[in-house]
Amino acid sequence: MARALLGVAGAVLGPSTLSLIRTMFHDPRQRTLAITIWTTSFMVGGAIGPLVGGVLLEHFWWGSVFVVAVPPMVLLLAAGPALVARIPRPARAGWTWPARPCCWPPYY
Image (cartoon, rainbow, N blue to C red; front, side, top):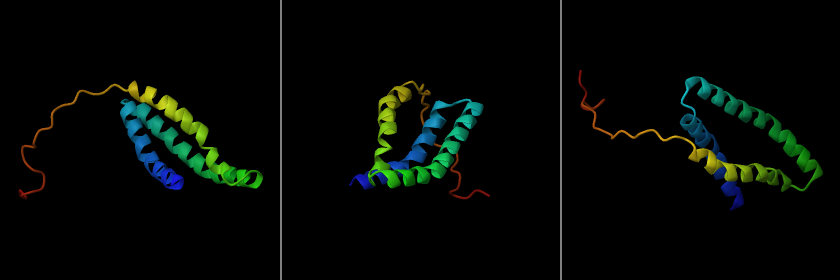
């Protein structure tokens, strides 16, 4: 069950963090920098992760590769709500029907 939850958490990690970046950074330059840092961290993590996992498996029990993720997750769970609460919410405009449908019926 825990492995399934780890899989679900890993699957939603990318889209959820990118949506947070989109919501938090309104300036295009800041958003570009944030996405660059996000991409770099994923690439570095993908390169270093197997090496760290190999070292942990060589010197500790096999569960240590999962225990390493606990401190960052605790920090994220503690700081995440405070960071997300600071994001200003844009005023919502009411949704209206388009004047003319985009594709049906075809207008030529």
